Amino acid sequence: MSIKLAIQSKKEKLSIFNTIASVIIGVGCAYLSSGWVLNNFEDTALPIACITIIGEKVGYYLIYKFNFDVLGDSIIEYWIEKYKSKK
Image (tube, rainbow, N blue to C red; front, top):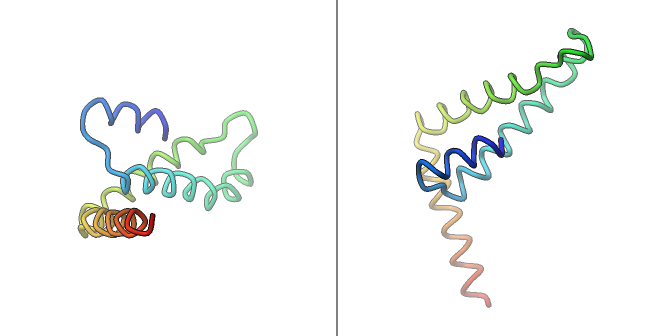
């Protein structure tokens, strides 16, 4: 996840929503699939990284397909402005 974010930051501007979504989706996919992976694969070849990357790609497709990125960015900007106004 961190490598993908580093490469993406060189190519385009990252939003806070994209960064948070990347971490949540990647860790979530790895966590949800860990039991199945540990039961079906040997310890020497755990495909958690592949599952994490695939899950992240599917998650991003769904985010952009249904425009959750626009909604997510708006919510995060609202929280940031609300937090700034309280200081």
